[in-house]
Amino acid sequence: MAELILESPRSWFIGCGAALNFVAGDKKRAPVWMQKAGLEWAFRLGHEPRRLFGRYILHDMPFAFQLMLQSFAVGARRAVSL
Image (cartoon, rainbow, N blue to C red; front, side, top):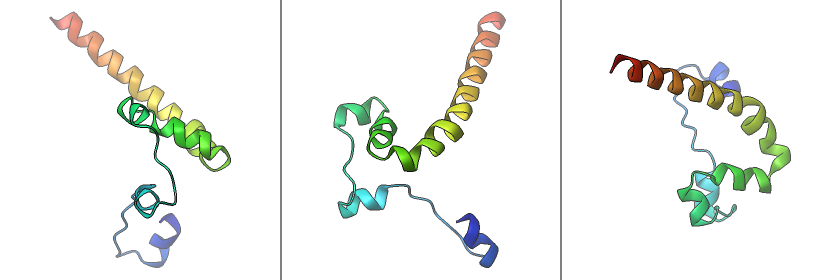
């Protein structure tokens, strides 16, 4: 999408992740217990580590960690104000 936007700046793009692969039957979904636990990403990482490591670990983990720290900070401020 990042490359296409330069060629078609007035177009809309929708990222749907692996949804189309799941529907088409190209990729297997995680077991239901992993889906419910929010661990489908770990299942996918285990099946495609070369493709997903950079995205999930190097790019997404620092962002998730930052969100977690901000959440704790907001919770701490609320606890002090009560």
